[in-house]
Length: 274
Ligand SMILES: Nc1ncnc2c1ncn2[C@@H]1O[C@H](COP(=O)(O)OP(=O)(O)O)[C@@H](O)[C@H]1O
Ligand SMILES: [Mg+2]
Image 1 (tube, helix red, strand yellow):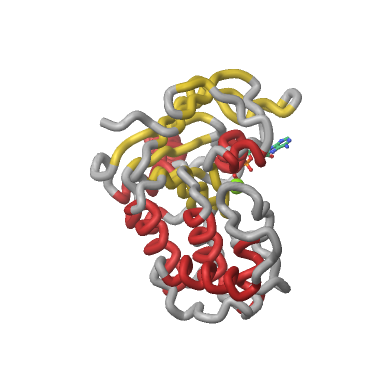
Image 2 (cartoon, protein in one colour; image 1 turned 120 degrees about the vertical axis):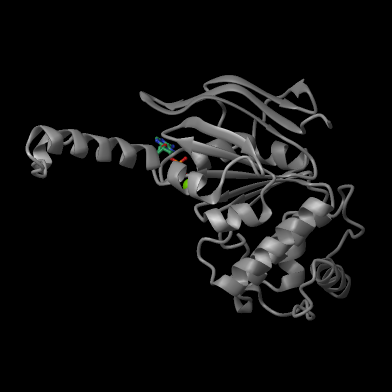
């Protein structure tokens, strides 16, 4: 099996007295989609911020291609091919598609063929990159990003990351605000990125979305890794249970039952439940 691109080993993160992540160990491989699941506040965003250089772990190590590494800044992480796409594609609504595709990319760096902004060429490259991902509706690089649908913006951002050589694509809840059709669009692009050999870290609340594209699943509960399994190892019900705190619900049921058997079937007063 291929060596993981990224590996977290016993990573902890605290903000002052608040412990947010506890002892996380997780591997991310090329050509795989890792779905990071968990309730609000579980620590998903904090975890990916550690992987993208926004936060430093309080303790533990990160390995990239088997070597220990510190992502000292988001810029450094992105130079190493770790690309994060935020929920709304992160693009500037008043910018053209061509402009936004090249924004922040110094033309003198290894990617850029220009030293001055060449609108026609930028548009041509941007449109081609997006169309290669199957988004044929985007055919004019002069159109404003603000006129794109949510799914199209996400897709543009993903195509951009791939075009500029991302090896790890991190998507924080990309489908959360999208309708069914738009979400399907983004999921297809996730699969395309995987096909091109990227490692994709896909954060979502939606178990269906995770099951559609995921090869590997990690469930965070209150900052700890509650489950780490591969496709086919758990059913949809089991995953939903895990995410919805199914264990907590089972505990509650057991408590109610034991109260009822001791109190002639009467329901327990709410105050008696933990
Ligand atoms: N910069 C911060 N300082 C203090 N607490 C934080 C900070 N960032 C996140 N947290 C806390 O960490 C926990 C996990 O947050 P987050 O990673 O955003 O969860 P998720 O993305 O799973 O919803 C939350 O309780 C949140 O309040
Ligand atoms: Mg979050």
